[in-house]
Length: 371
Ligand code: NAD
Ligand code: DAU
Image (cartoon, rainbow, N blue to C red; front, side):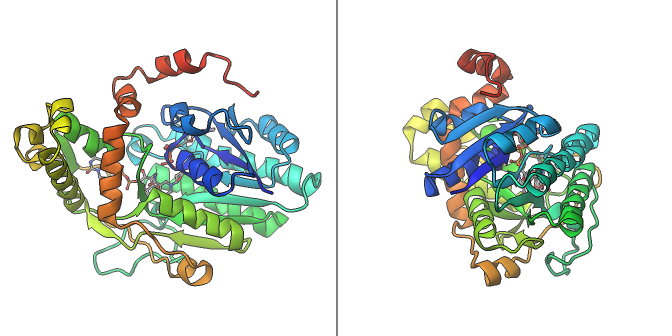
């Protein structure tokens, strides 16, 4: 049986991972440690709250004594480390939090794991899985081959630099102390519970409310999109069959220019609205509710400073060694994601209205600490 500590489990990928894990391994213990920053959302864990094998702990990964205590009392044998400041635009405006959480927080977790797992030997076997990003490899030109695991690091934003630093620390704890670590560097994810400051969820909620769709620069920047459920399955494969000390790239083999992606979302919205009077009634501000194409909402705006032009992942290693394959096509994933935001209006409306914190207090009270 695994006893997992999932850091950042109230965020986008972390919450999807917790749902994935408890669905596939209902006998395992899953403890989420999350500081509930602006990006953390207890409502994303609602479907599994109250299950006896699940525990939520409101706390910071930089709190080493809390992390050690959890590792001991839960006899944790697996850490899956998602917690991070994750938004590139925010890192440009305020890099400090990224250094604090992504660098110092990862270091604190590694130290706690070293003490409890390697010095105290509280459990017989352990694994520290570090969730990282393709952005550490920098930016590609159109003719460049996709990133492989040995591509030299060249991070360009404070976010990617802080993730690169955390990757190096994880590697060093394996090399120096023998901590059993694995790292995955993944491309852009999308799907349910995605905070609506990121491209896909922002475009969906803006389409539904008839707000402008801001496309940075010329819209020709390329990202490699992966449905979040496929990312979770990739991490599962690494936990089960990955080799300690190894790094695995995970990607969707799905490169797309931002403008193409936004147009695809507009097309999906147009089609969904055309066939659904209930949608037209609920989201009357959407142009498609009046038979007008959603592409009319697209606006080209000032570019992100230092905007990386292209990311693309070569995931041959995880495909060949662990049998990974993305299962959800972009069209399926975008349609499922659009449908999720339509069906879960309250989830994003509370975030967009800014009443999110107040709502959490009302729902869960102030007592949401270490139980
Ligand atoms: P997110 O911003 O949605 O969630 C981050 C979570 O971490 C939130 O719940 C937040 O409350 C929590 N957190 C932040 N600081 C914390 C701290 N000091 N202590 C405890 N919890 C803290 O992020 P995401 O998009 O789900 O990304 C998760 C991980 O995956 C990150 O490490 C990110 O770098 C990586 N990643 C993301 C993507 C993507 O497309 N979103 C792609 C590749 C890799
Ligand atoms: O590649 C993996 C990374 O993907 C993760 O490590 C990050 O945590 C995650 O946030 C994501 O980073 P990006 O910067 O690629 O994602 P974002 O959704 O912010 O932007 C995607 C692209 O869309 C990017 O080229 C910028 C552009 N964009 C973004 C927003 C929010 C726009 O054109 N308009 C927008 O309003």
